[in-house]
Image 1 (tube, rainbow, N blue to C red):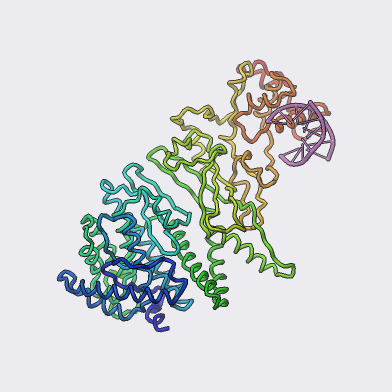
Image 2: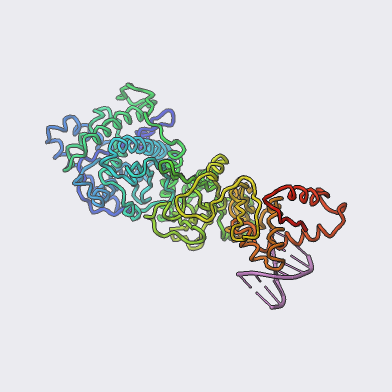
Length: 618
DNA sequence: TTTAGGG
DNA sequence: CCCTAAA
């Protein structure tokens, strides 16, 4: 393909993405779904091209756009018309949707461009280009978002800056540098859709514009880049009815320069300036988040290709190949996510850190013939999981079994704060797409505090909200059952909660049960046996005291009075433990496992303890 | 849901 | 620790 040759000149797998320059974003009747019919798409492309040319003429008449129109015309000729197809609706939609304070002009949406090139280019070039551009897009968005937001904190209350990709919806890297939350890092995994963008109530329109524009700048055509790195900024600045804050423009300029250098470095384009080669972005940001973001984008791009092929009912071989690639990539990403999905919520000094180690997929229907190979089964399972995840996930948060619906609540208001029983938090991932056959709620398989050090810190923290359960103790306290209501045994704060193993069909979702525990009370959904958690001496002591106080046969009362905070100990557990204790006591010491002289030692010890004068071992 | 008891 | 009958 001619276009491929033009694009695929990166000798190091680094392609310079071509961006048609669209100085003015005229409203175009263009659905984001036009790709279903290529003829329809071509019509729209023609319309878009006409609009662009008209805009270009207008632009060229402006004195301030010197030197850009010509280069623009060149790139216009060199780029296939398809590339323009949906860039316009993307931008126009974004601008209209958010008003952008009159910012109705911008650059062509790189996303639309990407999507088009994905269609037009051959497979390899598509992938490489998409990867390259999307990586660049991601990074630059990140860079700009950081720069922009950090520079405009006072005026921008930016909850979430979104980069939009038509068809795939919006894939958002949330960078809320709002003035209210000093430092928040989030990755929105949910595959946001256009409607989801509207839900970003905190999204600042101006910043959103800027970010989208940055995406444009990131993918300038080499010719354009060589003609002047600031051209894109000129376009933005002159054509929008509303001039963004100068600082915003400056940042855009900066990003443009930077991007030119980056995109061109390593390429053999004759117009490569070579200046600032090897430029390293000032702000590296969270590489992991960016990589995941980029991976997400790539997957979306490739899935789009597959969907295209399926819709056309042709080129199934190519589709299968694409699926395979997608599968591979997605599986990697899924695994990474399983291991590392972390939800950070930092709010000044009061922070709540959670780590969701993995999710369990409860129901996965696999239909496969008996004569299928194991490999095909693996692929089928992988596809099913991929479908679930790729279909978009809606996150739900369960606190003590209750679904927290109000998204506007603060974590503190919702009861997610230090000192609270964070092991009562559950996360659900519901499939958003119409994947009825796979619809279901993915329950968190593992959740834990971030790091053991945090557990200690956590144990020492006081929650500002009233909390009956915050009695962190490293050592199990002696309990006086004369006041059963005062007996608290918060073992779960100091002992690692362990969880049962997963019985998920998908092998790579099997968790490491020892490292990443979750409250047992939340995890009997899948029938797995709870992990064995032997009673500690302290627990036995409390149990004995409670039984002594309350008598046998009142296991519920024992539970409530002495083990109310130990969610992993049910009254049945206490009853069973008592049963074993009685049995152990009834048998000869030499028949017991463990230490025969245990009780005598305990009796001696407890008698020496003034806090527990009533101890009466069984 | 809780208790009791076998597995 | 699971399962379940019985209350």
